[in-house]
Image 1 (cartoon, helix red, strand yellow):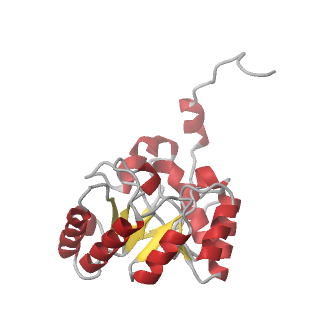
Image 2 (cartoon, one colour):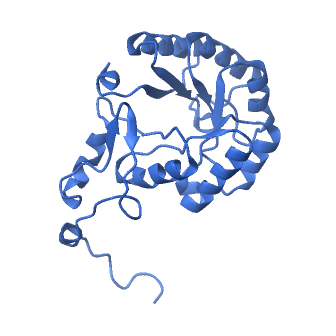
Amino acid sequence: KLLRAAGFRAMKIQVFRRNTQVDADACAEILAVGGPDFRVMVDRTADRSPNGLWSYDQALAAAQALEKAGCYWLEEPLARNDYEGPARLRRECKIIIAGGEGYHGLEPYKQCLIHGTYEILQPELRLIAGIWTARKVGVLAEAWGLKTAPHGISGLAWAGRLQVAAAMGSVYQEIAVLNPPWLPEDYCRPYLPLLYGEQPFTFEDGACVVPTRPGLGLNIDEKALAHYRVEGLQGIGPP
């Protein structure tokens, strides 16, 4: 209800429960509250799941239950180096299968395209080698008729992901909100003294407006930046 009232039209939750039907029921409940035009996505993040990796049969059962509940996409249901398993899920289910946040460089994305692993590719800027390489993923995805959704983060670090999402032509951009009932602007509040007191990101009809200022689009107050600057330690590291 909080997200819906704030104007957002989608949310993503993690699904780590051993009984995947409980996760599917949770998605159905969220959708009932959000309304007919609200979307729910789920993230298994398989390689980091506290309950370990799913077998293919477990992933298939989960995908089918989530699909029946009305879930929009299932993210990383199987190991990140398993390119064929998610492709098989795509053939056997209608739910969107997404992934790619854990990849370094372009080679894993190339393998995803060759195998038909994911319908939505999710580059993470901290791992893939920055904005330029992530933009290349967008070009590859476009050539294969796929969508992109740069992996999410919160606070000012989101600025780079928003710019690369716009450069990719992506209609998706995740925002990490890990401490409900916080909203995206709550994560930026500590940085407002560096930004002339202005929120760096604004939303219209559930979509983020891409800033048009130079660079990452942040309106930095250089005087405030100098005021709050903390000098690093001296004499450490190579000369």
